[in-house]
Image (cartoon, rainbow, N blue to C red):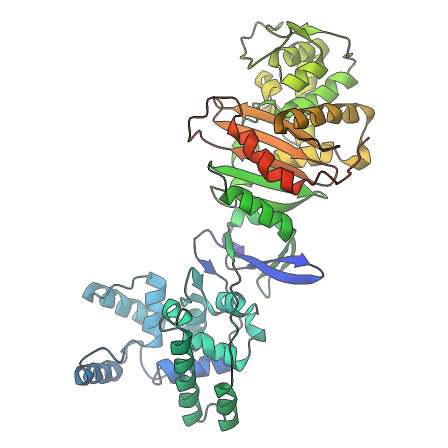
Length: 495
């Protein structure tokens, strides 16, 4: 994916309303781009910041001299000599040091901008790059954050307020009395210059601001293909598949975890939530071995291939003479139902060997919609050549156990996964499933759980608190979080 979506605003839908959720960016900063900058806003800016903007080459010598004289006369800094182009240059190079080298870089960049762009283009660039406090850049981001509006819906007073805080966004936002005073001074300045009417100035005096604090997150470009529903390239806008309530749950799950974790949720074959300690794209692009989470698929294939529940296989060795590690087994011989419950590897190897390893591997490739060449013997235990992403795992479960297409074998498998849910999480909810998996010496721990309505896949990375048990407090954390989400009163049926 290229950078064509950089600066797009991602929306979600709630109660027939489309609301902003985040900005596409691989950077920490939220910078929402727009091709529409109101002409009156440009006029206000030039009058307030740089009246000779259309006459200078990017550096205003007269302005610098006037500012220096005023500062010497006042005995302190009361005026700046930077032009709009220089301010743009400063925002582009992102260097606010008070040093000669910075001013020199700023001046050179300003001259480059003036030689490359028209004055109107420079104003557009300015409003797409200017800093508005916190991690916000650009007039569009500021309008959405402080007023919940796109640029074309901002009123005169809202636009003027955003110009008011330009000199020091964090300073003015935290000092309402200072921002109001400056707002009124700017309104009078525009009125005196006959850019706004006297009536408009009188209305400005009566204005009371109600600022919002709409929190946006930056969404990495590689995430977009998985959440995009509709795209409007003209307005640089994406309507996503995100369900904000589930998304808030996912984000809280990650924020409150003492470990690095990732989570993705699938509902009606769409990504409705995602979050990760490593960035928004991690659940989609990071691939790894997924351990025993593939066993439910194999279980169904083995049952459909003729393996009976009365048939027992060795639980401590296999017919392939392959030495595999077992965490636990309670009998020397188990059937595949028992092996799925306690996640025994040898039984699945022996049963797969009986029906044919190649067929078992092809079945896994088909379920996961991956190239069969990526699967080999270790795939019976969850390993593939290129790995499987958390999204691919969640999506495979959601499709495989779609309530509309459940076979008797899949219902049988789900009943075992429901027993695993009760056993590992310590509470009972009917028709909820869970399968866990560990890999990379237990440093990566997976859990796939859900019901007929939604599927969650969770990955815990690293082993930051030296948790030597197979799942340890990872399961306790999942239990604590999902008990509040998967309400025991909900009655989801797969039987």
